[in-house]
Length: 107
Image: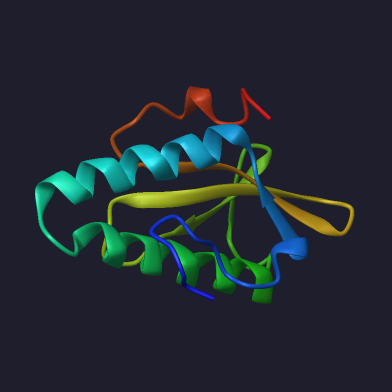
């Protein structure tokens, strides 16, 4: 399940990451790889855990405009997502200091 630095949890058919969310994760991993050994791996594990919480209860998280927001534990990130038909669409892995206007601008 957690085989690479940018892996995501099993049950991938239940959700998808937009290209913007994937870019957010890559950027965060790159930053934390340079900051401290092992920190990027801890970030990825925390993101995976947050996605698992979303999949387990997609309607439990705070509504923010057209999206829902699940905070990543121990890191200054939130996962922004929407539910579309039978799938969760993750539009951003957003740093808390970044302006929210970019969410959902790329698929």
